[in-house]
Length: 329
Image 1: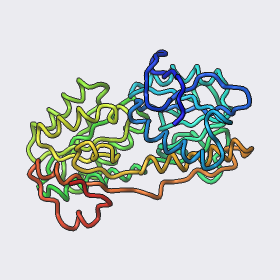
Image 2: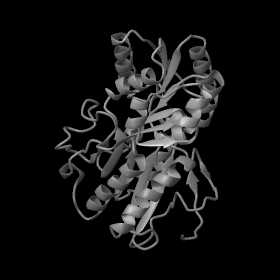
Image 3: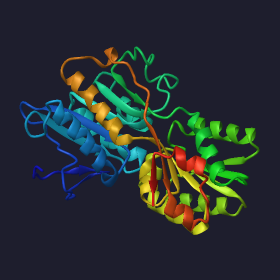
């Protein structure tokens, strides 16, 4: 592991010691500069950046030799992330890796010309971010997120563990451009199976706590946490509250199940970062983003925490256990 000092951008420069640097500010002579914009905090980004770096190493790009990384994080605050992106754009990186629709939106707020590889972006065509999946055009390409129809799958999983499910609250961040479409699909799926669904818009920890407490007031309730960096950053609070109120919940990323959440169904994000590294490599070697088709995810994983299920008094049916990619005991 290389040893060097670094600065982390998180709403202002601050020196924070980590086991490996997340950020290098100045592009050194002879090195290509790759910028990264994400809404996660350093702890969430550490394993993702490890996957990204490892894949770049395999492709011939090593930090300190021919590559510099500059990472700008929002820690669940999209305004902070957008503000931090301004300094990155000023450095004119060779490629920018933008995580999520908010990350891509932040980058496009400052540039429509620098090459961008995005990931975890839902329906970039409908949102007008690219021309088409096969021929994205412009300066950006990458990897899409969930299709909005996955909301029906999350609802189905809750009904599998509680056939008497009557009410579901979905936790969403209204600052995320995808929130409304996810919510509308889940609400429609609920009507089809006679499950009442409401959407709780939350902007901070206080509102998260209030939303989960309100959900717990109704019998046979459940919770769906929509994909968003605010939820990931506050995952420990969410999991603690869900356990306190004994609510079954389903999450979009395995990091929730690993931290005590009941179930997660979603993408293998470290694998997505490895795939993104291959596109960054191709652009650094001269290909243009408009020539690289946008790819849809092909690897989803269902993770069930059996210890949490037992604590909630839930009996997970064998059919669901058989479909799980991983069981945490």
